[in-house]
Image 1 (tube, rainbow, N blue to C red):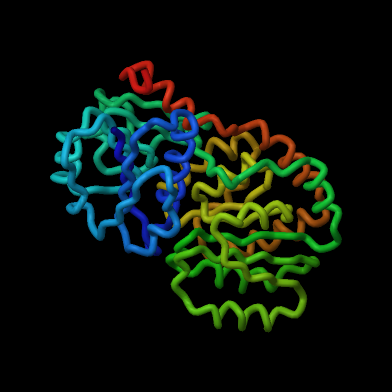
Image 2 (cartoon, rainbow, N blue to C red):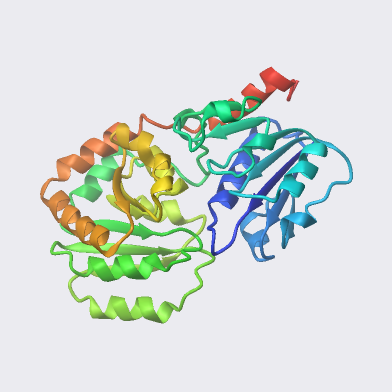
Length: 338
């Protein structure tokens, strides 16, 4: 018996939800006899995003409502923080706690950590009982993300108008979609901007429409997406991202990405793929950062070979085997799947 618990909302984003949904579907593909309970901490509308027929989904409003009838083998936790009394209860009700969120406030209560990058925001010696498996090989890629072929990307790159996606996550708590779009109006090259609005976008669409009407120099397409997001991104040559899990999916797909962060302590999440020259890190989000991004896009328009090089190089950096590796690792240690 396995329980997977994540926390998601418009404020904190939907990355945890996407990652855990992908974990479950891929784990079931490995072993369809698994019994998995999926618990989402958030509002009830999130259930529509995550529900699959192969497992049960329960949505609760707060973490104190995640209760157990019997002890389970594993609890997978994907959230940045949880109250100490809650994680202590979960630990008591499971044989092992497995954390898959790179930022978590109670690694001291966990048994395993599987992370998408070798860089950590903690010292391994701080948690001597925590088994750490961290690196790009443990990057969980959602089912709907697929590699863009070199032929398709080269065709896209040959277009006079740059096809650029703007995707700020399912919640976009700070309405960066609007601010990025407003900044890109100043871009001096022909471009089509695909503005991807997630399921939990909470702001008025009228403001976005107003920006679209005022920008007469570029084509702008506004799209509300979820599962279809990567079908649209397949048409693009560049993506602008807030440094979340889509940055890793873009590497897998071969779509070069420009990234920024809200806080300095989040930048470790992107460091490894930047070192592989599979993404660009533009630092902390600000008006100046957006100006720098506009200038960089103008440069890329004149130097498209840089994009092609990143497309080719990035597709060898991450594969889709993370969940299989997690299963095998736990199986070797715990006898899971035996």
